[in-house]
Structures are given as structure tokens and as C-alpha cells.
Length: 396
Image (tube, rainbow, N blue to C red; front, side, top):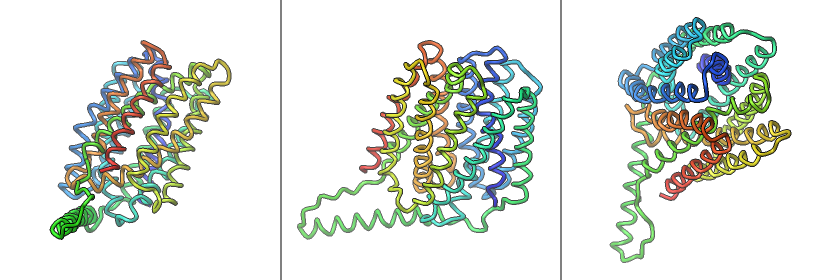
């Protein structure tokens, strides 16, 4: 039940994810303004991801940083209701990003420490599926609020109230683990396994046996590069996407409808990943998922050229794209908790943030300067480069 607060938080940000880009355009902003807003927020979040990850592991207190995150978001989102200045909206969004990332490293550690290594995939999948359902409900709220003509202030106030509910719920339900040892045990097991393999290879060599095995540690650089590139491609594609869908549908309610379907695909993916947690194949499947996303991004180029009914085809492509992302996130989160040492729990979010920040500016800039076709082309190529990195990581 400790996840319930995160459920309400994701409801708020599911609603905000589509509403805010359209709101910026509505108050006189441009695609480049959206890019600057998203990129500045993500860049600012990078050092703070490291900070929150370090401080929560250093103090071994996780609940307090989750509460700080949700309470700060409640206050900042209330200030959103008081302005329509694009510049001030950008500043508030950047400030919000500092506290938004505060709950991510503690959440990842809670999952890792409350469950054994064998249960990590299932636990992460359940968490992501549960909170993705909250995100989906937030999109549904946005859909109905746009249909019934609720104003921007009312929408933003609802986001603030939902984060207040998240704060209160987490205050009651979240508790820090009594013992912090599971990640340490996994690290020891990996070290012993590496030493054991080395001894086996050495004994074969001494006995004159031909050895083909390679003794290599997992390539953290390839894994990190793959995460950055994947996040860069996803951010390049999805940051300007609400505006693209709005242009071809002519209304914000249909944008929410498309994202509802997209989020539904993601929720289904998380729950399926949880049921298949023992069969995910870890790093082997990651590269397959990434190349599949690359193919879907290239497919959007063809869809963008079709003058009629392309909104249906866009939705058909986005649903499996989000479904595949669910498997990707579960696998990479589980592997990252093995690879990243204690005290650096925020590194996963830093790597994601670097790519996301760059893509948040690149995507809207390309869309405004060259058109959405080039956005899809760029995203597809970067997804392919990410596939190459994860393929390298899987072979090590």
C-alpha cells in the first residue's frame, strides 16, 4: 500500500503532461518555448538527481525525501495557477523539476530493499503498472475537463490538490526499511561470481585446456550510453508530440484520447512484464525492445504523409511503442540496481535526464524549423544508436 501516494502523484502528472504544452501554446508561447521549458527543467534536474540519490543513501532515510517532493510540488503547482506569463511558467517548471526528482531515487531503493533480487523485475513492474494506471486516470480527467471547458487555473489547481493527497497518503503509508542490505548482497554475489569464473578459466589454462571464454566485467559505459541515447530519442519524439496531434485533430480532447490509449498500452505492458518477470531475459531483451521502438519511430514518418485518418494510425503506433517501453523500463531499472553502487542511486535518473534534457529542446526545435517528419526520422536514428549500445552491453 506504500505505493498509493505515488498513484495520486502520477495522476497529477499524467494530466499535466499533455495539458502544459498545450497551455504554453495557448498563452502565446511557441514550440521552442516548450523545448526551452522542458530542456531547462531536465538539465536542472540532473545534479539534483545525484544529490537526492546520495543524501537518501547517506542518511538511510527515504520517506522524508518522498514527502519533501510531494509537498513542494503541491506548492509550486499552486503558483502555476497565478500566472499566464510564458517566462514565469518556464521558471516555475524548472524549479518544480528539482523537487520532482527527489522521490525517484528513494522509490527505486525502496523497491530494491523491500524485495529480493529474484523479485525485482516483478516488483518494479507492479509499481510501474500501478502508477501508470494513475497516469492513465489523470489523462482521462484531462479529457473530460477539456470537453467540459474547465479553465487552465482549475486544471492546475487539481494537479496541486492531487499532489497534496499524495503527500498525506505517503505520510501515513510509507515507512523506511528496517534493514538496508539487499543491494549490498547482490554486489557481493556479483564479485564472487566474477572471481569464481576467473579461477575456472585460470585452472583450465594451467591444465593446458584451450579456453574460449572471456573474463569481462559488465560494460557500464555501454549501458549508460544506451540509456542516454534511448532517453534522447524518446524525448525528441514525445516532447512536441502533443502539438503534432493537436494540429491534425484540431482539439485538445483528442490529444488526451490518444495519450489515454498510449498510457493504456503502457499499463498493460507493465502488468504483463510482472507476470513474465522470470522470463524477461534481462539485457538480451533490451536491445530487441529498442530496435522495435526505432522501427515504430520510422513508421511514423510514413503515417505523417497520409492526409486522411492519420490520427488513428498514430494511435496504433504509439500503443505498442508504450507497451514496449514498459518492458524496457522494468529490465533497465532492475539491471541498474545491480550495477550502480550504494550512494549513487540517482545515477539512473541522471543518465535518463541527460538524454531527456537534450531531446526536450532538439525535438521542438526540429519540429518548428524543419517539420515533424524530421522529428520522427531523428528519433528513429537515435533509437537505432541506442540499440547498438545495448547490443554491445548484452554481448559483454
